[in-house]
Length: 70
Image (cartoon, rainbow, N blue to C red; front, top):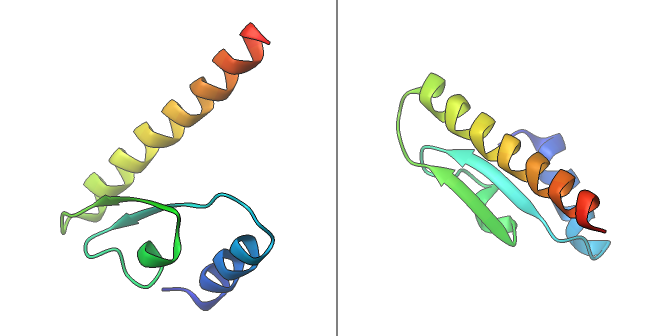
């Protein structure tokens, strides 16, 4: 719910970007703002961060795989 993150999401949306939010617990204010909200609905911050790290790795590998086949 950091104001600068919410403003960045608003800016990206207005600029026509496809947006993804990585959220935890209830998704906060950011979750509903994103085109895709990947929410980890658990109370433990460490587990949320671990899940987000896995998602970030998957996104990076997707970019690398796409670049390798282009």
